[in-house]
Image 1 (tube, helix red, strand yellow):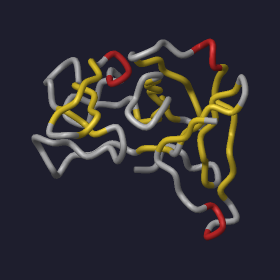
Image 2: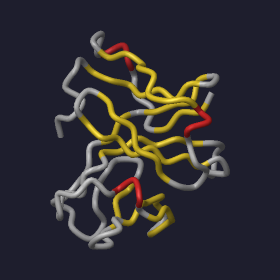
Image 3: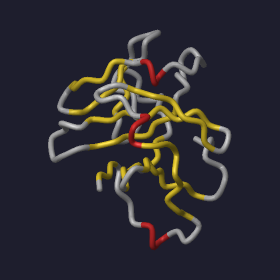
Image 4: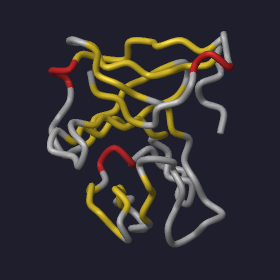
Length: 132
């Protein structure tokens, strides 16, 4: 089982792992987008990540342009962090926490994500998944 952005679930009984897509839907070292509770979520699968296979779930909407394009961004490393570069304005967002390296006032919502068997799951709290 792979897991990124691990959190303790015991502090929030409303949080639960929700299936988002199948493992076969992921593209290694690239992004795919899924719809969940009114939000487009970009999933990035890094099978050769340091520390083992990782999957990250981050909001697909670029905060600078308002376009849903983050899932088409290029994944890389910058300043020791795994990032995705927005395809429009090229700002870099850390996949771990969604913070923008160039513009700290900008960030993207992230969801804890994991691969469990054939399912890709995110940790969802209630139904307000699109809240930032």
